[in-house]
Length: 263
Image (cartoon, rainbow, N blue to C red; front, side, top):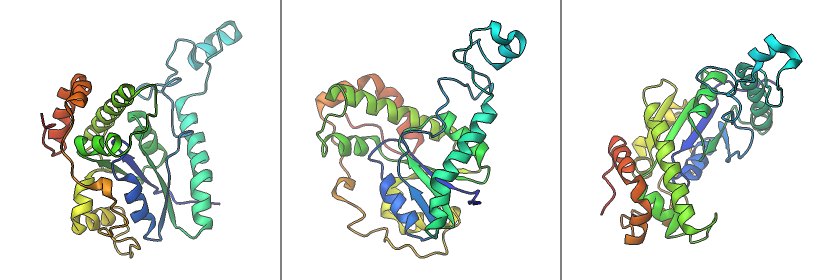
């Protein structure tokens, strides 16, 4: 079954950035089915390939095999990156595209809260007509949503969770900023979509969905939950844990149009 070759991907700079709300809005057009976060099978090549060269990220690669045959150490031998991307493309089209079409959606896509530049590059290579939305949110608001309204410890400790969150926001906001001039990518602030219906309309228009009716209203109180409220107070204890990342986060906040973290 042939599926759409212009999928939509939502890459959120961190969890608690409004990606589930945007997923619901886009799916609510009735045109594109946006699936949830894929923890597996989403162009995760960092352990075997480097996208910069297309080669295996160790000396025991395919080129070495073509020279030495079985006389080489083959434990990490893999095909070329282009073959991996082609295979992953078929996998995701079958996993997401085919069920979407069977349910009556013309287009498909998914959202991710964990990704790297390798994911963005692979998506762009697999589907040149794809649309990638980098959804960013003020660091403090996303942080508070994660740690003030959700006290569950997900890792070894709260401190480890804070460190992981900071690293994730910093690295993924960096990817978004680096891709800001790509034709198939757009950085969108969650706050703008939440507060300005015209901003949402502009995004839908860019996605090719503007002429369709959205079932879920942008300002529906059900769709904008309590954790969406603006909170800009980070505790002194949290400021201490954030300190190693503070300079880089403040820089990215400015580049994305936000104020620095309040001291």
